[in-house]
Length: 143
Image (tube, rainbow, N blue to C red; front, side, top):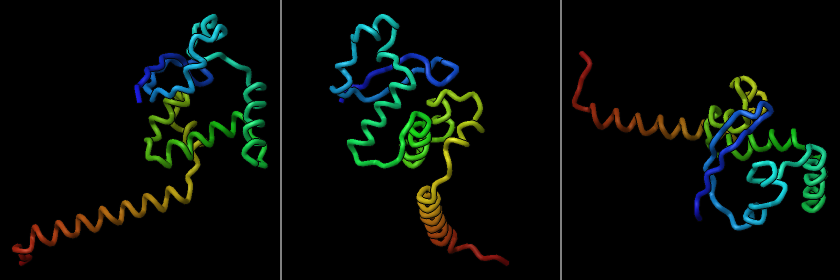
């Protein structure tokens, strides 16, 4: 897949950010959209109300009973999409347009799966370091 650089603003404060993302043919239909071009954007800007309406349609189509909205989508993105895939919280903070890391920490609730995954990785690292220590320093004695 071809990579695309997107430059624009993100978050409530509209801070400038450049993002590199994989090109997907499905997003091409939005390029050169007359509303987006008029706004100087890659994608057309829609209202929060319209976005929530789209999320409701998606939820209905997927059989999701929860009332989805933009706020929930941001939480989901921060926790499931990024942090569970080992994206550093500092990067997530930038992606969400936060100026303070503490704001992102509220969005990025710690998930039990993440704790378990981190503990397994720590256990593996610990085993590796013990093996290294045993083999590398066997000839040494403490006197």
